[in-house]
Length: 126
Image (cartoon, rainbow, N blue to C red; front, side):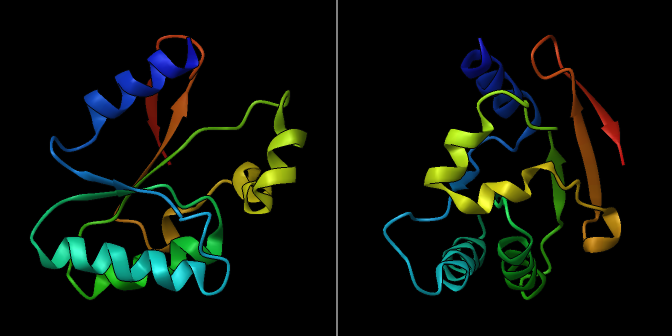
């Protein structure tokens, strides 16, 4: 059910044809810089990009790259479920920051919380 909902959210809310980018787990050193460079190349090609940036440092790196291309920064945040988080943290420690809600003042042009992600979701502006 969550996977179906995720696809629905991506299809409904994100730009058609946008390139989805996630941190490369194979890159251990300078992962944030590597991600920011990928985002910069995509934006330089004139395409929209959607980035999964769970940590503040990753978001900062991506936002800096986006600002260089005058990209509009729209953030979406969903409160993580309490169950299942410990095993995620074993594999991806940066996901520990998922429970920290980002703020519009962090540099977003618009920021939304995904409310009731387990049901029919709705967006609430933050």
